[in-house]
Image 1 (cartoon, rainbow, N blue to C red):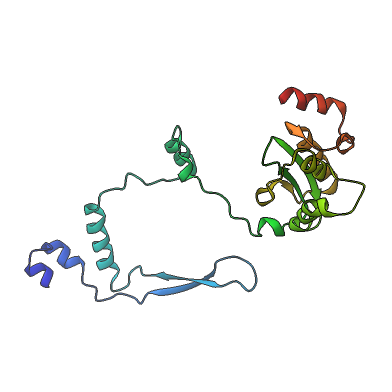
Image 2 (cartoon, helix red, strand yellow):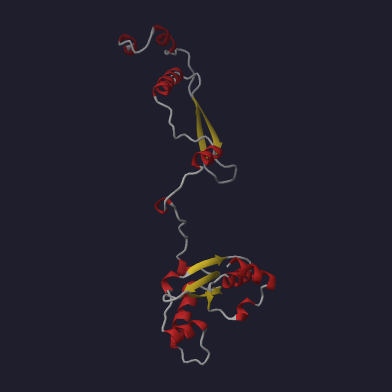
Length: 214
């Protein structure tokens, strides 16, 4: 009645809005996922309820007066079309956050780079990465006649390696693919410290192909 007195609505709308014979809203309980022990979703059906006509009227008024958003995306195809040709700066790129810290990850193929030159070493370990890196790092202090290639490089050139920024190249593959991945990453290095025997499992055709790519 107040809306009509203030001329917010006309006579036709005023006659449509009141409801004297409406039914109560009905609630349907449906599972969100069709599996056991999953929560239910409540769906309220308000059709023919006392406030249904009023809610529909208000919805129509708001819809007609709110401008359509130019940023609305209906589907993935429209998103691809909209973003086609768009270039993003490095500050807008999102990086995946690892579930585990890098040093606690297992079954990885890793790469250690020298701080002073382009030499690098690729290896693999089933244990935690920090355990294997500690062995590489402390090997120079061991009283052993069998020096590792990393220790030899550190002693001969007085260089050290970037232990804090070791790259994980691959992880959690089946064993045979994991070993092949290690061999391929060894071959991809520009100045490898790995021994020739580390890539004996790779067919010579692949070795030549990788050399051509490099």
